[in-house]
Amino acid sequence: MQNKSKNNQQLLIYSFRAVCLLLIMLFTVPYSAQTQNNILENVEVKMNDGSTVIGELVIETTDKLIVKTKALGEVTILKSTIIEIKKLRSINIVDGVYWHENPNPTRNLYGPTGYGLRKGEGYYQNILILLNQLSYGFTDQFTIGFGFEIISILAGVNDSSDGPSIPGFTITPKYSIPIKKDKWNIGVGVLALHIPGQDELFSAGILYGVSTWGSRDNNFTLGMGFGITEREFTGKPTITLAGNKRVGRRFGIVTENWFIPFGDDYETLFSFGLRYIGERITWDFALFGNIEGVSPLPLIGIAMPFGEGWKG
Image 1 (cartoon, rainbow, N blue to C red):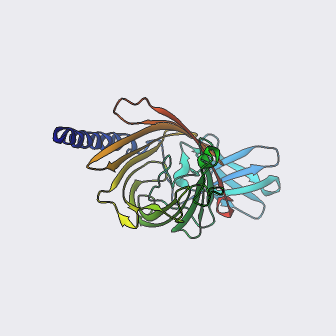
Image 2 (image 1 turned 45 degrees about the vertical axis):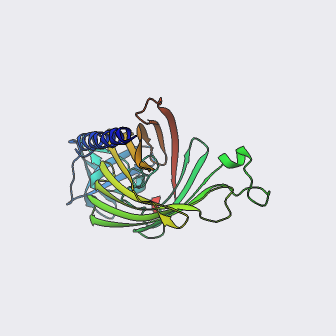
Image 3 (image 1 turned 90 degrees about the vertical axis):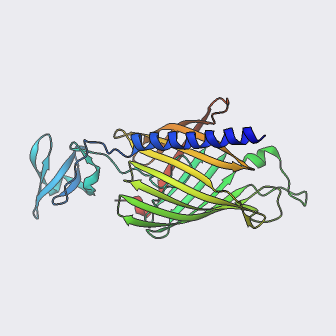
């Protein structure tokens, strides 16, 4: 028994080191094509003939704009032909092409990053139809989420009064602190959990902290949380290592890995997937499992932003 525990501890250490190395190699190197310009303002100009011009705003007068583009040089646009002018963050201009902002920088596949939603931003997330999450930014630092599942309803779980069970749900407030804007964010939060069939409103939970290094597109996250059951903290923390890397205008890769205490040992859960990054939607296609001979299982998720904060 002692040998098994020792082997599990060694396996945990090796797994932890391997994941750290992989994340550092994959997710902390920024894409070299990205360019930034903090002097001229970047704009997207939509015109009434259906065309769009993206570039640096050089001159604006009462009747025209002059926009410097990568492909065509300086382009003069009459204001009478313009439908919309949208300011763009220069960090999202890559080789003269606008990469719309990642609508879900605050999460990995499920767990949180150190980034928070900005005031007025929100999103709805669904995983495998069964798990749902709504999150909203009340300030630039404070985000709160509400999650619920439908597994217990489909399984017909009842509570102690033999009536219909309240589905399992979570309340997830998080406070984010930008240590260095767009380079290092930390977050602290609580996941309060209601378990179907339990009399208590919140019968379990996790108190956690996460630190995210990197931009909203390319980052590495280390998290640690202590479980709460029967109003007592668990003796060992749950540890998470995760990373996000944007590899194109529409695609990114994401991994989220958990080291979870069970008794005297730790169990590991690994995941790796592809993320489709749309302007108003993201899709996740991933595999997750552990390293003890269990075949990887598929995970499919979708997230859709909403709220006034996304309009611009």
